[in-house]
Amino acid sequence: MTNEPIPQWAVELTKQVAILNEKIPTHVDWVERNMKDHEIRLRALEQFRWILMGVAIASGGVGAWIGRMFV
Image: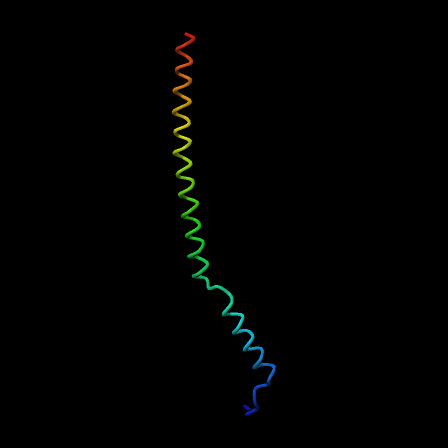
Protein backbone atom coordinates (compact mmCIF):
# COMPACT_ATOMS: atom_id res chain seq x y z
CA MET A 1 0.00 0.00 0.00
CA THR A 2 1.32 3.39 -0.87
CA ASN A 3 1.14 6.55 1.18
CA GLU A 4 -0.26 8.72 -1.58
CA PRO A 5 -2.39 11.66 -0.44
CA ILE A 6 -6.11 11.55 -1.12
CA PRO A 7 -6.90 13.46 -4.33
CA GLN A 8 -8.59 16.83 -3.83
CA TRP A 9 -11.56 15.83 -6.02
CA ALA A 10 -12.25 12.87 -3.71
CA VAL A 11 -12.19 15.12 -0.64
CA GLU A 12 -14.58 17.59 -2.29
CA LEU A 13 -16.87 14.77 -3.41
CA THR A 14 -17.00 13.40 0.15
CA LYS A 15 -17.87 16.84 1.50
CA GLN A 16 -20.67 17.28 -1.06
CA VAL A 17 -22.13 13.87 -0.24
CA ALA A 18 -22.12 14.75 3.46
CA ILE A 19 -23.95 18.02 2.71
CA LEU A 20 -26.57 16.16 0.64
CA ASN A 21 -27.08 13.59 3.41
CA GLU A 22 -27.85 16.41 5.85
CA LYS A 23 -30.55 17.76 3.52
CA ILE A 24 -32.30 14.43 2.91
CA PRO A 25 -34.85 13.50 5.61
CA THR A 26 -34.18 10.26 7.40
CA HIS A 27 -36.41 7.23 7.13
CA VAL A 28 -37.63 7.77 10.69
CA ASP A 29 -38.78 11.32 9.84
CA TRP A 30 -40.61 10.01 6.78
CA VAL A 31 -42.37 7.27 8.77
CA GLU A 32 -43.42 9.66 11.55
CA ARG A 33 -44.82 12.17 9.06
CA ASN A 34 -46.77 9.48 7.19
CA MET A 35 -48.14 7.96 10.42
CA LYS A 36 -49.49 11.36 11.49
CA ASP A 37 -51.07 11.83 8.07
CA HIS A 38 -52.57 8.34 8.27
CA GLU A 39 -54.11 9.09 11.67
CA ILE A 40 -55.66 12.32 10.36
CA ARG A 41 -57.17 10.51 7.38
CA LEU A 42 -58.56 7.71 9.57
CA ARG A 43 -60.21 10.18 11.93
CA ALA A 44 -61.79 12.00 8.98
CA LEU A 45 -63.19 8.73 7.64
CA GLU A 46 -64.58 7.79 11.05
CA GLN A 47 -66.31 11.16 11.36
CA PHE A 48 -67.76 10.80 7.86
CA ARG A 49 -69.13 7.37 8.79
CA TRP A 50 -71.19 8.92 11.61
CA ILE A 51 -72.48 11.60 9.26
CA LEU A 52 -73.60 8.94 6.80
CA MET A 53 -75.27 6.99 9.59
CA GLY A 54 -77.19 10.11 10.64
CA VAL A 55 -78.28 10.75 7.06
CA ALA A 56 -79.44 7.13 6.73
CA ILE A 57 -81.46 7.34 9.96
CA ALA A 58 -83.02 10.66 8.96
CA SER A 59 -83.91 9.45 5.47
CA GLY A 60 -85.37 6.26 6.93
CA GLY A 61 -87.51 8.34 9.27
CA VAL A 62 -88.69 10.58 6.43
CA GLY A 63 -89.42 7.53 4.28
CA ALA A 64 -91.44 5.93 7.07
CA TRP A 65 -93.37 9.16 7.63
CA ILE A 66 -94.16 9.48 3.91
CA GLY A 67 -95.20 5.82 3.84
CA ARG A 68 -97.65 6.33 6.70
CA MET A 69 -99.12 9.45 5.06
CA PHE A 70 -100.09 7.60 1.88
CA VAL A 71 -101.18 4.24 3.31
